[in-house]
Image (cartoon, rainbow, N blue to C red; front, side, top):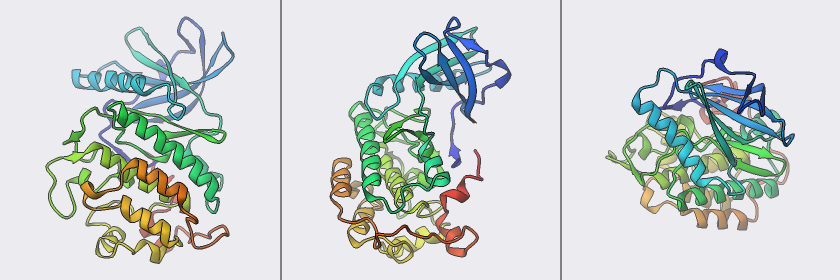
Length: 321
């Protein structure tokens, strides 16, 4: 799991998770994930037989600001729920003033991070990449149209349902088009301006354009199974090389010239000149070939120097947040 900054609430006390919630209608089963935000469990709806994902948010011991963050996550997810590429928030259950339970769609395929790192991913399959990425962009465009900016776009927050993808986790989302919450999100996916700027010091950043940058990193993840850099900042040698020469990534990754132009439009250091989401979606779908080869790309060993610089996703799995 990629490290996430500024998670609003403390972890759920797992001993407080009951065997069943919602008057016994949801039977809690195995845990799907746990982190700074709380925990996510698989649950059986005894009335419909459907499997649900239940996100358990601890409300005990929170200060007023943390409670506001918690309520905001529910409110913003509900606002964008219903889109085919966003996990439906079916209901919110509160019991004993201790935990808040968000009942959502449950994907049998797991998340996109698992697909990329453990199941071979999409490397070499342009058709599948275009389909999944197009769905992700559609979800983000829907969020932006509703005035919601995700701010934590990454493969772990995209759940797979067969050939469909659904966006989850609005714990860091905001309704502010212009934000001063610097460093909010996951390190590998942060835009330079979200970290205070690269070329010039930023006093704020555009929340929508920050999401666009994160989508560019996800696109690299899909095509090559790795990150372009560990962090878009001056301390990162690979990113610094890109700043000097924005064709640099093509020298270390087998991307086509057409795809390279798309990536440069996403990773534009001036956010005001960054590609729009509709244009990004259009150009990716129209790209004749994402890579310079039609065969599956053989990636360097994570132990290699370049592999370290490019932060392979498989290596990232060891960095649990």
